[in-house]
Length: 264
Picture 1 (cartoon, rainbow, N blue to C red):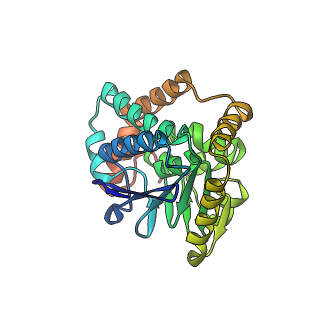
Picture 2: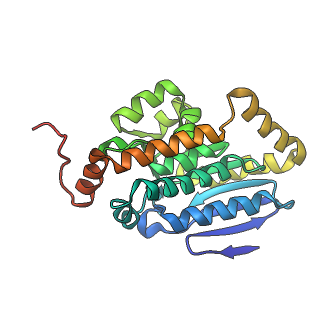
């Protein structure tokens, strides 16, 4: 089965659903339309009895570069209420991925920036090529990775998050593996084989048991992501986007100039 949409493709074969971001010309950056499509496809796939595992992949040199520039231009003039609605949609997408009943694998073939980190973190497993780069770049724009934080902090741990949230450093796949953000690092030519092996292991296991184990880990390992926590992250990003520093950071980025808080 092959089902194309505007921003992604869905292919289901032998129990594995492969959802592929298909906007390589913009480094698979997302906007409100992509967010809506991802939310819908993960919700629909989660309800299918013929799907035993889900692979989230991407076309082109980058896995996901975060927010689309045209979307950022629109957001630059959003009111706080518009930012709340926008961040709420992003939060719903991440939750749809995280709470997908079937196990999920991120197939990371290239760079992952900002909001794209949330996509990888919301998946149960992640395999990355050794050339992939990772970056939580929000503070460079005067923003914070609020909406993705529940998932990213779970994936890399609080200690690593303190560093990479605050410095916005770019780090490589080996470091992403060391801090637990990705499970394996492989050569580009080995990526599909390794992802396929993991997917096959999931397909081979008892489907009800796999779903129950996924719930078990979520419920036992840490407190569940609930409405209050999500509302807090949505409030956080809406506030910072509407602030003077947030607006200055986005404006300076879009105008390709230095933000006004940099020291001379």
